[in-house]
Length: 227
Image (tube, rainbow, N blue to C red; front, side, top):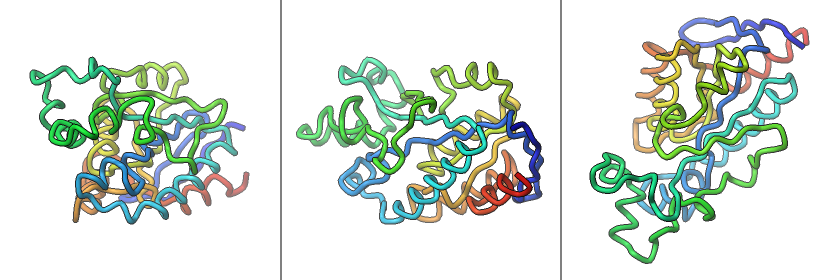
């Protein structure tokens, strides 16, 4: 049913028409959330993943229950690396996963590579029929994908965003959403950053410059109030 909710958020509450909202679930993959995944291998702490996965699960279920479409972003590369671009592409130099695989040949083709365990979305958040899954090979969900067209076709104007890593792919997607005139709302306790202090920095950026912050509980409360 179409309705407008008032969503508690920072820096201030925001009105959201549920029929014009979508939930974007960013890169909730073994690579970024699981022990033995890419982030863990290159030295980032993923011990905070379980509560984030659980909050993302509750957020996804709440959105599905009211008909808000769920769009998964899945980050990684083709096995032959054709979407990397080689040394002329910045991602070839800056992707920690690509650098790690070059330095550790035993892992070649095993990290954030399509068809691998590392690339797969964590079991707890497996997409369901009706959900959309968009593959990407850069940080932002809008870079080189059809995400903008999908949102526009559905007349979406508000994007609820959760996932990992807060300061990399989540923030990049939020920034690009803002610049495309969407209203981005980050579900802060359903996100996890890579790097000490990075979560707070990204939350500051989103709250002050690019969008709004809410929590999973506040979102669920707004969605179920007077439903």
